[in-house]
Amino acid sequence: MKFKFGKKPSGHTPAAQPTEAQRVSRRRMLHSGAYASVLAAIVLVVVILLNLVVNAIPTKYTEFDISTGQMFTLSETTVSMMKSLDKDVTAYFLAETGNEDTNISRILDRYAGESSHFTWQQRDPALYPTFADQYDAGDASSNSVIIVCGDNHTVVDYNDMYSYSYTDYYSSTMDFDAENALTTAIAQVTRENTYTMYALTGHGESSLGSDFTDTLSNAGVTVSELNLITGEIPEDADALLINVPQADFSELDADALRGYLADGGKVIVTTSLLYDTPNLDAVLAEYGMERQSGLLVETDPNYYAYRYAGTYLLPQIKTNTITSGMTDGMYVFAPTAQGIVTADDTDDTQTDETAETTSNITYTKLLSTSDSAYSMLDYETATTLQKGDNDPEGSFDLAVAAEDSDSGAKIVWINCGNVFLDEINSAVSGGNAQLLGSIANWMNGEENSVVIDAKSMSAETLSVPSGLVTPLGLLFVFIIPLGFLLAGVFVTIVRRRS
Image 1 (cartoon, rainbow, N blue to C red):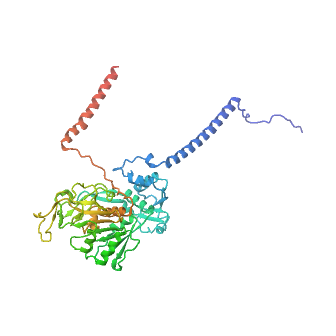
Image 2 (cartoon, rainbow, N blue to C red; image 1 turned 180 degrees about the vertical axis):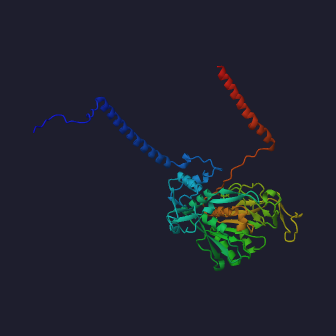
Image 3 (cartoon, rainbow, N blue to C red; image 1 turned 30 degrees about the vertical axis):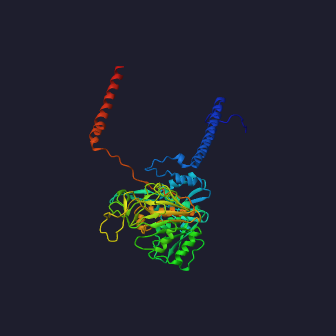
């Protein structure tokens, strides 16, 4: 058998080898693909890094607040506080994923952008069911915020971040009050000093309502009750509150109060024309303050409540250090008040805005009537508010502060028995409580924190005067469209001729 070696028989021709030009082209395509892949990876990394950098930039630089009323623009008060923040504060936003109130998350971003010491995290109650309990916030509403600083914490409830303002009896608008609530909470948990105020009992004094105790708590003041039956005032008493005593002080109680003031004590007193307290009044008289006889009646409608009698005072809030916590437009409601006469009231050279000084006592006016008010002397038998021939008239002071430069004693006397009632406070949206907080801060040497106004969430509507309706209708419906039509015809003719 013979074997023949040679080419194998095949039914097809062998594949042609690529030419040099083809090999070069393939290498170029491979290099181009690798280059494109590397470039795509570099671009992806740059985009990710740029995104991280942009997210690290405070939202005030990356987002513009075009909301109604500048809802997310922080006030100077908040910005100043955040700039000076030297403690780490964490806010926990209690909201279910997908059901967050974006208004609150956006304003928390603004806070975080003002200080590196402030951060916030979301905590979904469904994922962390027991998280809020460790901060006593188990009953907090959804979208509430827990503010934590070290061992201190407080809860800003969702319902406290929105409020309603009534334009009339039938309609209201919703306001965004989150900044005021959050700033107050941050100040509360970062405060270093705390104070104790003793509210005296045993003379029929009225207890403070929750509006006032909450305001004092925000100012770092704890209120405890004290009965002077022991004849001693505790050494830790940073201030005393004597709120509308219905019975007079005994001689022992009056002497205890004198001793406390002689040692530089601080006292807030409110009294009512319904109750005589000669022993208490005698202590106040030693500091140059006495009751003005009669019931104050205001005749200027700007200084008493609308549709009420002239005895429902909305007095002028004097501008000074003590009232610096009161914002413009805030009111104090003081129904049924008497005036206070100080030792320097005969000095006509003093202006309303300045303090009056006698010897070692400095007097500062806090609340005053207009110049057209009068004090009704026979109010107990009067059937109308008609001014009597002997009724003194002019401007009267119903709240005065006295400071003794020798002992350091401070007294604030408000001669109105209704000023610290919750229902009276609510009539002026918390103005009375804010006054008490401002007084407490002054007595304790703390800086007053201004209340931040809520931001309206209602857009302003554009009202067109009825006289302009027809001309504007003709302008936008006929004249402007006709002008565009004629311009189009003109352009068409010019193009065709050219």
